[in-house]
Image (tube, rainbow, N blue to C red):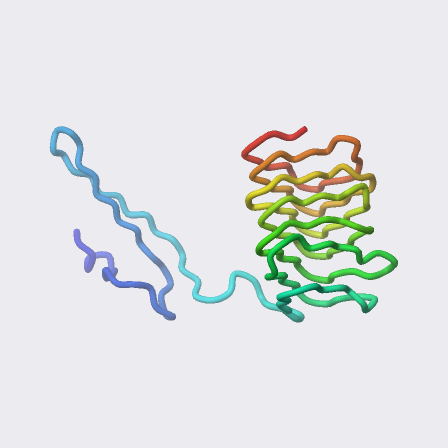
Amino acid sequence: AGWDAAGVTPTCPSTTTKWVVIRSTGTGANGAQTTIDAVYPWYHGPATQPAGTLAFFEGEFTATKSTYQGDLVIRDDGDYECNNADGVSIQGDLWVLKGGLVITKDCVITGSVYTRDLIDTKNHKLQVGGDLMSLQGSIALTANDVKIGGDVYAKGTISTKNGSGVVNGSFKTAATVV
């Protein structure tokens, strides 16, 4: 009837922990108590298997090779301008931590895209192999030949006016899709 009866101890998970239990006890207006245990598997390690290269940039990054392989993290304040057309691509995820993504020339990213602010295609082709996500901004998919392999997430509006293309997932927003 206690922690020990289930073989559980009230401590923080360790590297050998296989399960975690969240115990919640509530008391009703009449004084009656109810206890509920929620049991979840615990995995200590990365959610995905790392592969390729991870690069951080504090300033401007321009894809000068025919292909950039690995996840790309832009930590500089401001928007990242993707202009990697003509056979150049980012093979991995793109993270823009303190800004948005502006497509200034056709842009190909084989993984997912995560930004803080606005994602704007600016009438250029955008191809993303995974999800497209703006944590605080809107997404303007207003160009032709947009291809998104996963879902499109935005806190703000998702606009597809004057645009065309394929989204293999769904649109998810706290605002509206226009």
